[in-house]
Length: 343
Image (tube, rainbow, N blue to C red):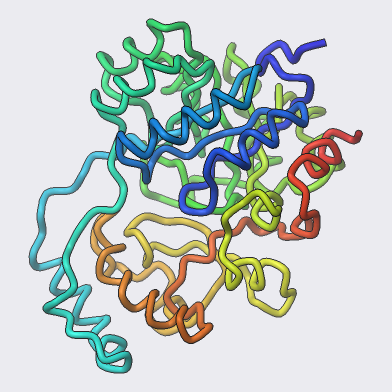
């Protein structure tokens, strides 16, 4: 029997994780009976087409593609100068000339050009982070019959998504790894844990709700389903699977109980995201206001990250992780998917 919302055998969704996966992980999850997801936020049109070709060639059932819908910030030379001043001691330590470090965004929002590529493949599900795209783009996605999903971190955001055209809402608890999906308010105090947020969103909406954040095993899946979730989205547990492209440094931190807590930081992109604490976060303050607006903080860190990683150090690396790393022991994405479903 197919899942009523997902169209899959199992109520398990592999979270889209930009920078640590391509189509291979998504295809493996789909083959195991779950819903595989491809992160589109860091692909240009050509790279996205390549990944979509690979995914569509391997998968017969539904799959999902995810995008960011942030508003690119206006250029702010003063903010960029403050950020580079904070990083100056690290540039000096690693022999980097900051004048030679180009500025840049790194992540592009969903656009008409990307929608044109997607339309060639007509994915069954297109999901968004940070709200929804402009009405014309949203209508274009829906025109080929795709379900539109988006993340909410509060009941207010969930209601807004339902009122503005979302078919499914992902209730993202505060435990979740990676970027917070908030878009109506930057106040993190308004956000709550998955098991507190989920039943409130389920009660408030008339459309399906997916639970995300802190779920790493079959017990967590069953708890979320009991609270009214139609399905469960899992990210962190998939990071150490063979099919993911997670770096050796990142995998080591995920598996090391002594690696430190996974805390919210805005240093790596300019927007709050949860990752394992490292040197940069400890020394600058994880939520320092000195990091410029999303996604412009990334460019200045890139050469520092490269230099440190070449020495086996993750001092400047975004080690994205949810608060629950207990599911990171399974190397097979297929086995993990079925284990999450209690199979």
